Image (tube, one colour):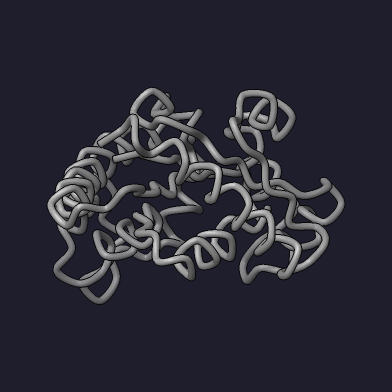
Length: 201
């Protein structure tokens, strides 16, 4: 089974690209969705994060906005949060891959926003980076709820630059020309990847 890593900086169009990959019938593991589940009521991350940052828990779940603000004010807390969340995400990812293999999937995609930042590129066979011009990235990011220029700057400061991601990628998808262009790029890339799969049974 060929394991493909999908990544890209904030507001590059990675979520939409993942949807286009699913359209092809290819399973995609969504790290962000798993984190949302971990933070929801009854999620495995709620209790340990509550012990670390009590005011980040509201109505039995992690309040992401409060958590984000606390990390902004004290970036050292980020590592402690990552030490809670990353092993839980990793366990979920392992289950996903095992299920894909059991079903006989030829390709599985891991949507990992911080693939390079968390040094997970070695666990995938190929990397697809989603990109867009910086001006469009800024426009998209600042249109998000609760996003500010200061918060965006902090997020970008923790991410490997788009230039470096593109230079290290096996494939690049540019989302600046709209949905149909992105769809065509996805189809072309995954047609190529289908031809590589035989060496990764």
